[in-house]
Amino acid sequence: MPSQGRSTTGTTGSIAVPASRLQRAWLHRGALACLLWPLSLLYAALFGLRRWLYQIGWRTTERVQVPVIVVGNVIAGGAGKTPVVMAVVRHLQARGLRAGVVSRGHGRRTGDCREVQDQSNAQDVGDEPLLIRRATGAPVFVARRRIEAARSLLARHPATQVIVSDDGLQHLALARDIEICVFDDRGVGNGWRLPAGPLRERWPRPCDLVLHSGEHPAFESGYTATRALALDAVASDGKRTPLDALAGEPVIALAAIARPEAFFGMLRARGLTLAETIALPDHYDFDGWQRPAHTGRRLVCTEKDAVKLWPRAPDALAVPLDFAPSPEFFAALDAKLSSLDGYQAA
Image (cartoon, rainbow, N blue to C red; front, top):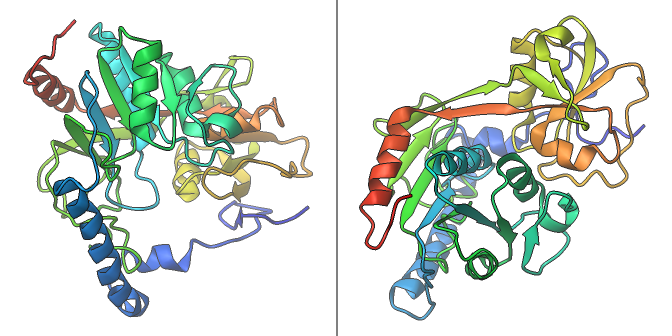
């Protein structure tokens, strides 16, 4: 079969595609990063011009009638925004608040504004919005312009009290009341802007809450979160299998996320034997994907991939990620929500 996106990190039978040279360059100020640094100045100038156009009113920032919490990051390549969104939504729900979610729906084949349903196709609404919908039960709307998604959500669900935006820290058309900036263990990389480094915008920059799941010199302040695989893997019919029960059994691990090696490493740390690893591009749609020939081996994947993989491989086991922000983070979030003008708690 084709070797699309295969990784060499499996213990046996693995086919290799190493991490991108550019992403490695983003970790240090080496030769490649220095070569790209002049382009990063142009990127920064264009980003600054765009922000200035909003500041002087040539481009409009629009507000909706409920508080908006934006969960995003300043680094490219994904830093775990979606688990934070789900954690925040669940926290708000536990407090009795009606929360809704808006997203662009990255990677979807449609371009309209639509509500995400439990039975939606991930190719139509995006894998992350579908995962959020199924995991939280909250109303989720996707649109190219998040302000359009927010308005549609409130029109369809007028009792909504808080909107959480999945990504959108740089989407200035939607006014926000609270910004949460998310980092993983990469921190800010080499500290340079794209394409010489991973930063979409300068850091540090004003932000209401910083949440990180790794140790890095950039994190002199902020709140922490823990990341760990769930105790059970989940089948397409909802049946759960203890992850420990898979220890010692050669399995095939698949991940179509920004950092597949992180998932593979967590599986190994839990004692799983990865006979083969398959690393595919983030938001991969699985069109034309063929299952490995080792039909007797179980296939394990991320929870995000499962929403697209299960129609093609219903026996695949999804391993959810337990993402737990510290209690201090939620206390700070609650305090900021309570301080907003016109905000009414449940």
